[in-house]
Length: 229
Image (cartoon, rainbow, N blue to C red; front, top):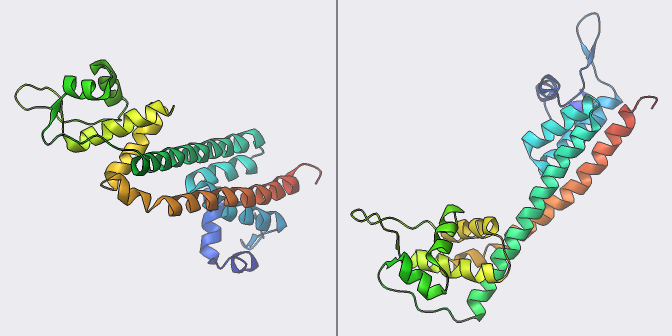
C-alpha cells in the first residue's frame, strides 16, 4: 500500500489509524477492499506531523475534529498545546533564573537541624501564613513532627524556601515556582539541574518547530477537505 510505504508504516497501522478516527473513513469496493485517496495521504501526513508537536492524545483530538469539519475544535486543541508550550518556556526561564541566582548571589548558611515555621518565617522575613500558602500551592512540602504535628523544615526544605523567596521577589507565580522546585527536588539540587537546562531548551525548541511543520500539514488537509475544493 503506497499510503503506508511513504511513511514506513505497516498496512495494519494505517487501518488502525482509520479505525481510531484520525484518518477519514475509506470507501470500500464491492469485494471489501479499502480505497485510499489523496485526502487520506494528506490526512496521514498531517497526523504524523502533529504527534511530535502535540502528543498522541491531542493530535488524535485535532484530527478527529478536522475530519468531522469542526475547524474551531481543532484550532482550540492546538491553542491549548501552544499555551502549554508557553508555560513550559516560562518554567524553564524560572529554573534558569534560579540557577543563575544561586551561582552569582550568596546564600545564607542553612541550619543543621529542622526549623519550626516561625523560625523559617523570621529567616526569610515573611509571615508564617505566607509559608502555609506556599505549602498549599505545592511550593513547600515540609514533614510534620509525629508528636506535636508541627511543621518542621529540614535543610532541603529551607533550601526550597530560599529559592521560592528568591523567585517570588523576581515576580514568578506560585504555580511556576512549585514546578521549578519539583524539578530541583527531582534533580537532588539546583546544580545537577543546571546541566539539563540546555537539553530542556532544545526539546522545547524542537517542539515549537514541530508545531510549525504540523500547522502547514494540517492546513493542507483543511484546504483539501473544504467543500468545493
